[in-house]
Image (cartoon, rainbow, N blue to C red):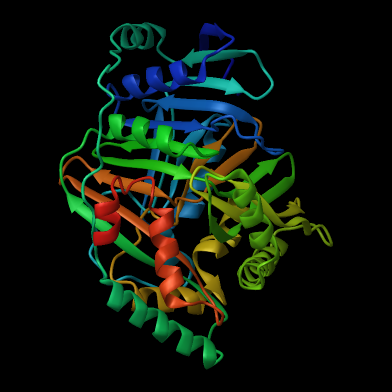
Length: 435
């Protein structure tokens, strides 16, 4: 059954949709539902992007799983070939390998959760209309009529305090580089957490974040009392027909307001040996992960060391693709590559063991993934980075940032890169310096 037919009714068409209006309308509507996911491409060019804007509200069916989650997800999808939106927590690693985390859990996100929405706003790329679909037309129309738009756009993110001091961070990088020198690891993604306990308006916070740092995989995700406000530039994996696409990011450079200087920075990033080394290690890891479910000889590196520009940074992005073997389904392909190599390192299992030993907070949804499955069997999932996670139950705000540690890494420069990646949420120079 396709979502847009049978039970589900197309109730409203929006001609020549205005993205900002759709975003504000969707954010306003999100206050009326416990489960919401809004995915905004922010007009970025994307050869594999299928939708400009998606917004899902309410629950027709839901799967929340902390055990045998990937098999449960496949069973859930088999029940109905419909739209499903949800998340994969980094903590699913414990179901894939003999791993665990001893750090405190601060949020209630299950390890895996997906829901079939009651209401959907869908704007497909290349189309001049966006459409509302709903299982309950009257409820949706009433909810839309009740939406209020906040005129007060003033917002300041709370002061986030680091879980590691700068000295502690530098010491842990030293520990990791020793592991590299021993030959135990080639690369590891090492992260630090910044947090605060302060009440915020998550809807207003997301509008502010999206304005400051519009990204191709920006997302607002609400699951009861927990919120993810994502400004992610990175795709984990997409499926288009039987083609799988992964686009790992490794390599970062600060942008300049001077156009000539900015172009020089891009050229330097493209040819930087350290950044290339980080990137190619993860490309090799991703090739290996895709090969587990690929048709023979179908794994390709379509682009190596592409330089892409975002509001705060330039990034080095590579594109790795494969043809999914008919022996495997979509969930098995995701499972074979999860967690994504760009957020772990190589070798992956050893990297995750060292992450647990050297980081002092549990990642939870950070460095996991959110996205959708559509009725045509395609999917698209981001990497949860550059994101604020918030609990309205405890008022905890959490931001985690990190980078790749290799033999060529300079600890102080890696620390500065972390702060650069957090710039959209660090509202003031005083706060950045304090962190």
